Every structure is written in structure tokens, then in C-alpha cells.
Length: 103
Image 1 (cartoon, helix red, strand yellow):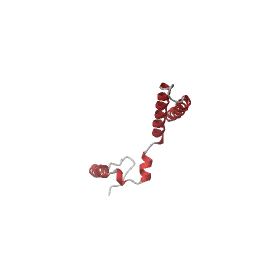
Image 2 (cartoon, rainbow, N blue to C red):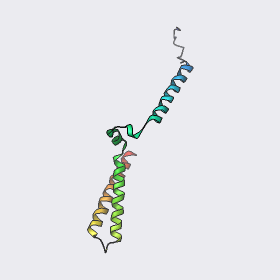
Image 3 (cartoon, rainbow, N blue to C red):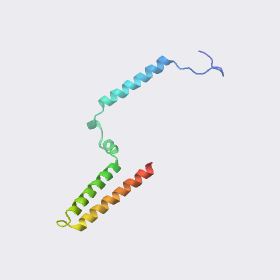
């Protein structure tokens, strides 16, 4: 075993590092091939879903419904259109605030 002096630097064995890197890469590839949505637990699936994506989709849907109500104003209730547009607008502002805070 070689004694390390102040002037010496540690030089790892490149073959061993390459083997370790290849082994880790093979394990990652195997995990990715073996990964299956059905094998995940319910709470693991829930963690993958982003709540802000759901809020964004909800905001867009309520704004579309509100716009459709506004287009057919003479046949449908105007109060429902105003509420739908207001809720969609509120959700959109939440999403904009989140975007500003994250950047």
C-alpha cells in the first residue's frame, strides 16, 4: 500500500469506476423496463399528480363553460355565466401567482 504524501493526489482506479458506473446504469435501465403503473401503490400514484395541473384544467373548463353561457345569453341564465367566469378567473389568478412565485 502506497503512503500518500502532501504532493500526491488521489487517483482512483478507472476500471473500477467504469464498472461501477456501468453497473449503476444497467440497474437504472432494468428498473425503467420493469417499472409498471399497476405496480405502484395508490399514494405513490397520487404523489405523481400535480395539484396545480388539476387547478389549471379546472380553471380552463370553467372559463370555457362561462364563455359558452355568455354566447348563448338569451337562452341560458346570465348569473351562471358570471359565476363560472368569476371562478375560472380566480383559479387563473392563483395559477399566475404560483408561476410568479416559482420563477
